Image (tube, helix red, strand yellow):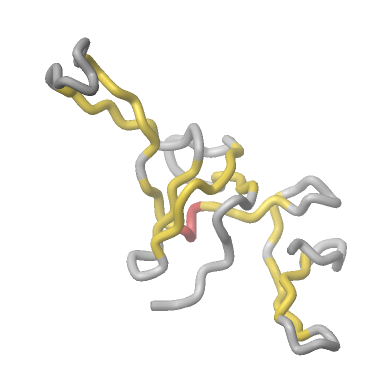
Length: 106
């Protein structure tokens, strides 16, 4: 159960798989499974029957989880996918830094 390099709300780029090249925002993180759900990536179709809340029923499309190793964090300053470096700041808080430009990502 390793700590993941992405958090909820981060913008990531998919680096491998069927959705390679797509970018999206991380909606949910599952650290125990090592998986993340990214908006617009790995779209799965679910057939639902009519209910009181959804009287029409039909096919619902929603993003499914992908492995965290298949995504790279997009640096907000250099706008490219990058790896991260962790450093402690003066107040003892851990910061995530871009490996390319060295600026803080948090």
